[in-house]
Image 1 (cartoon, rainbow, N blue to C red):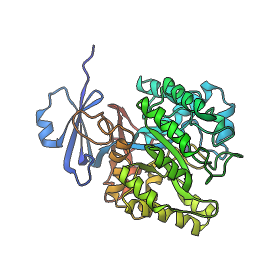
Image 2: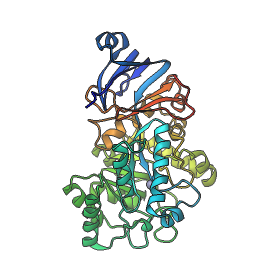
Image 3: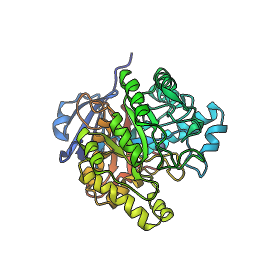
Image 4: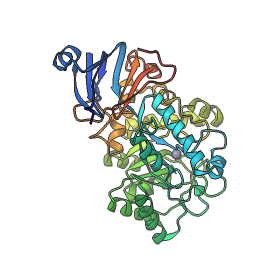
Length: 404
Ligand SMILES: [Zn+2]
């Protein structure tokens, strides 16, 4: 058996992860799928054998591989992603999913959480990527989201009614390889008919059944929740992350400040699913309404809510090849660069229960890293200039990247 080859990757800066920890003229030593050492370039270079491959990136920064905590690989980001997902045969859909996974990797994304597909295809793709058949990020898949009959994303196959069906679907997903359970606590914009976006689909009691069953199987729960009641019920039920969290009500918005305080106190992560095309959202919804939604995201962060990066890639306009565009949303809100990068690395890793495996550069961690031109803390746009990606130690150079 061939011995794993050691590679020493060096650059002007290495951002190891936790805020404020930057190594100037730094390096990362990788062996196979694992990080072996992180430190000053001179120190690491003097300790390696002559067989070690050196890759130096002047003018660049090495940072932990990025994490998109909310994608739908089965959706194609077109104006009507639903028809394709319903009509394509498995193999064709899987090929499309593999292509979209590769686009995310091109963007420096080495881990994604897929929050809803059909027939376990994301699990098949996860395994194929892990086996090296396709280039792509690690996939943490929810498989089929639980919804009510005719409810949000019912066409993915997760319609459940009553306690027995709820518990059975959670177990079915787990058996299929789900690593997280997704529940549609409220309606959503993508689905015609069914509950309105702000309207609850499940009772607090039913959400508690989902959580109890999932936690008994060792799985976290991600709740899609736009409406204030759905958010409050999800929090009371003990879900692990809340998706969107827009505080919609029948007319306008209704922020429940005590629930926000509870989200912060319990450390429940909130993924707003900021589309790379969030500026279009502002145009469509009107400036006032958009400003209200946007301002609330900043306000939640000020209240101590842990936000994590995610794009909702796959739904209309949420493309797979502009992760930086989604991060730009937080820059627009005035978040410092360091905080934005944390949201897309270590904070997201912790929320996905991968905090001991990825999201930072440290010995023993999975070799998930990205090399970008420039310094992303000084200027977030550097994240658009991806030179090299390592996902589980596998090198990937995006097409069109400046070669090195
Ligand atoms: Zn979604």
